[in-house]
Structures are given as structure tokens and as C-alpha cells.
Image (tube, rainbow, N blue to C red; front, top):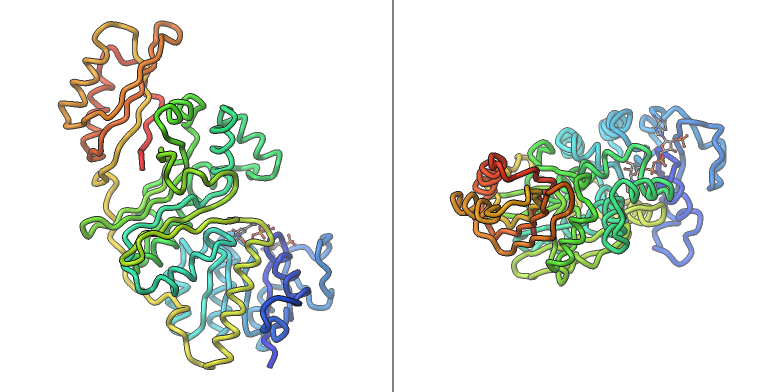
Length: 427
Ligand SMILES: NC(=O)c1ccc[n+]([C@@H]2O[C@H](COP(=O)([O-])OP(=O)(O)OC[C@H]3O[C@@H](n4cnc5c(N)ncnc54)[C@H](OP(=O)(O)O)[C@@H]3O)[C@@H](O)[C@H]2O)c1
């Protein structure tokens, strides 16, 4: 029997998927049993870099999800609508769904997975987080025997590219972002990447699989990388750290914390040497200890690799036990996780302060930190920089976020303080 795929979208990822099916030799033996039977696009006249018979291409995507001949709908159009409605319609029509759409899954996974459970169909999403890295299947299947305690990842290639160039070249954020946009590594509107929204979407998906509950996107604390300057990168280096946009999901003392923010990472940490657009995820669990996955988090080939693996998995499952959902491939949790507020986080902090260059400044800072039980691990003071201002960098010991913020509020009241350009957390 041949399984028929309706491919919604023939852009970067859709074309990558089509190319794999057009060249199955040496790949999985199930590929010849799968046919891309219909393709949906927005513009029928666009020049494509993959040859598709025009009689299977349509701009009426509803007709594909309603087509009784289609077994599996592959959604690679992106965005919220019409993607969400098309996925729900496909499910309602009893079709299995493969999607690369983190935005839809992170926001509407609840509705989509409830519908798929009711209909007894698969919704597969390997490509929705970290592109080509097979981390979702690892969480669903290969690491199933573990109690996961932590999942930490560089899950956004654009910001990792920018921060890597800033680290190696000492370049400033704005100039590096402009360069990344010119090279096609950053979108014209970079908000989703540089402000951490894309990373938060992916962390919602990964943490949900790692910790076994649904995650509300709005419960994830999020900060982007716009405030990082070349001097922060320089100080971090001097202190033995690099700076990465990290997604951190961690269970401590029964509390689940999930956050996305720029983070100082010790240079010997496995994620410190992940550079450029590469993604990486470190998972800690009992009894495995620690595993690190790294690889291409985006791109036509990498993302199509994950999409096609999902299609093959669905077909293999349907061939072996039809009309039965393999629990290892589904997302079965129904309850929302309670996420600890950021104030409960206990971590080290880095702060860069500009002060008036007067005697007693360091003493004032020490008193304000001490009054709020914030102990310091390192303090760096450079020569007066300009206009009578001195730059002071502090790294704290592990302290509660609440105490640290109280100390910072007290420091903001000091007459010797000019400003606090950067506050970052340390891994
Ligand atoms: N690109 C990556 O490296 C990557 C990595 C991981 C995940 N993803 C995810 O994969 C999905 C697709 O990304 P992409 O980069 O392939 O996007 P893309 O290059 O912009 O392609 C989108 C495709 O969907 C079609 N489309 C969009 N809106 C449509 C509509 N309203 N009606 C009909 N067709 C519509 C477009 O048609 P036309 O071609 O006619 O315009 C195009 O073929 C997104 O969810 C993205 O987040 C992408």
C-alpha cells in the first residue's frame, strides 16, 4: 500500500522534504511506499527550486486537508493561521499530521493534541524544535526510562550566530545583527529571534516533553539579547565565561522553572563551544547522567530530515498496527505544569554598573549587596572610562533572584551610581 502525503507549503522546508522523496535511493526502505500526492502553496506562479508536477499543486489548501485520499498532512507553511485551522481540520478528518510549526504548537498544542487524541491520529513535531537534531524523539522514546532533572539548550541559531561573532570579533550587537540580516541568518524583523520569543516557543515544547506536562507559554520567563554589548562579552571572557541565549528548564525541590535569557556560561561547559547557527541541548536525567545533542537547528535539509523521519515513523506505525496509536509517538499529558515564578530562582548574577568615580563607591555597593544577603564572587573595576564615570563589574555567589533585585533597587538609590547597563544571570 502507498501512503499519500498532502504537503502544505513548498518553501524552504517543503522543498527540502520534496527533494528527499524525489531521491530515495540509499535512504529508508519505506520511502518508496510514501507519495507526495498533493502540494499546497500560496502563489501558483512562483519559481520553485524543486520540480513538482503542476497537476498536484494547488492554492486551495482546504481541499488537501479535506481530500479523503490523503493519509498524512505535512504542515510547513508556518505562522498561526491558516496553519492552525488546517491542522485541526486535517485531524477532524482523521488524518495524521506532521508539522515543523513551533509557533502553533507552543500556543495551541493543547487544542491540537486534545483533538488528535480524540480522533486517534498522530501529530508529530520533530522539526518544531532544533530543526535537524533528533531531540524530540529522544525525549519521547530513547530517554523514557529517565527522570529528567534539567534541559538546557541553545535553541535559536540566529542569536547564537550573533553572540558567537560578538565573542570572536569583539563586534557590537547592532553591527552584528545587520551583518546577520545581510547574510540571511536573521530576518528583516528580528524580534522573534533576538527578543527570545522563538526560543521560548521551543522551550515550551521541549520542557513539556521532558517534564510530562503541558506548558503555558506565558509562564516562561523571557529576555532577549539586545542589551548585550561588546564590553559585556569582554568582561565575561576575562572572568572565564562566554554569553549565550539559553533556554533553561529545571526541576528543583519539586519546582519546575523554565526561562529564556542571555546567560554567562563557564568556558569549560559543553554548551560554551557551540558556535554560529548550531543548536545544542543538554539533558540531565536519572540514571543516564548527562547527554548533549548538537547539530543544525535550521535550514532546508536539516529541517526536512526531521520532517521526513516523522512521516516514516507514522507510516511504519500504521503498517505494523493499523488503527492503534503507539503511545511512544504521541503526547499524552493533559495537565498544565505549575511553573515557579522567576523570583524563586536561585542563581549567580553578573552586573555591569557605571558609577561616579568617587572614593567609597565599592564600599557603598558592598553594603547594599550585603544588606540583602547577596555575597559577591568577583568584582572588577577598570580605569575611569569617560566623563568621570567608572565601570564596575560584579559577579555574585548563588543568591535568590528576589534578594538580588532588592539589592539592585537599593543600589539604584545610591548617589554614587550613574546607571546599570547590564544585568545577566550565570549558569
Ligand atoms: N526554514 C527553516 O530552517 C525552519 C527550521 C525549523 C522549522 N521551520 C518551520 O517550518 C515552517 C516552514 O518554514 P519555511 O522556512 O519553509 O517557510 P517558507 O520558506 O516561508 O515557506 C512557506 C510555504 O508555505 C506557503 N504558504 C505560506 N502561507 C500560506 C498560505 N496562507 N496559504 C498557502 N500557502 C502558504 C508558501 O507558499 P508560496 O511558496 O507560494 O509563498 C511557502 O511555500 C515554519 O513553521 C517554520 O517555523 C523552518
